[in-house]
Image 1: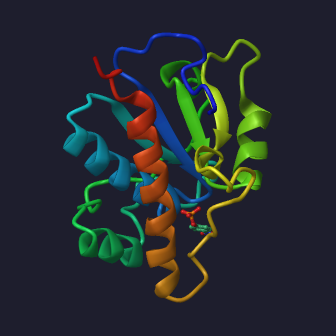
Image 2 (image 1 turned 45 degrees about the horizontal axis):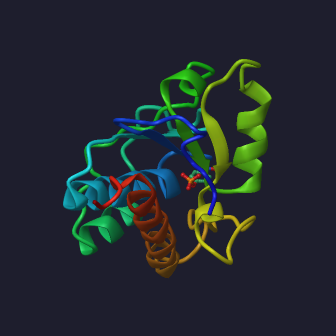
Length: 166
Ligand code: 4NP
């Protein structure tokens, strides 16, 4: 099991989901995580960002909003923003959707960053090193697959950050 807490006891975990545009994968990941943490009763700071700047201020892609709604999550109020160096101090864990996002994040990571940076699917046994496929240029069905992936990531996070049972 990967130690996502970096040997620090985290009372309220702060987790940032990262993709390219912050309008498809990472807002879906944030939506899935918000639902999973709320239903587990765990307090967490959850946010998402993109490495690119094209969609700053935009709501999630309509197809992402529709898929989230279909799964019981409302992500319509989220607005895209770009990853900044300060995020590497504000968050305990930054989870990138794919290798390109990971590389771009590493390029702006301050030398004394406190956040752990890894791929989202590294949290899923057997899927380490895999990227969450970008659904932006594909068919609507791709968004269902994205939700399945990020929902599994959300469940793994909840398991990791659940208080130890007595
Ligand atoms: P995301 O998808 O990284 O999952 O938000 C994309 C959204 C927009 C673009 C690429 C990927 N784009 O090139 O505009």
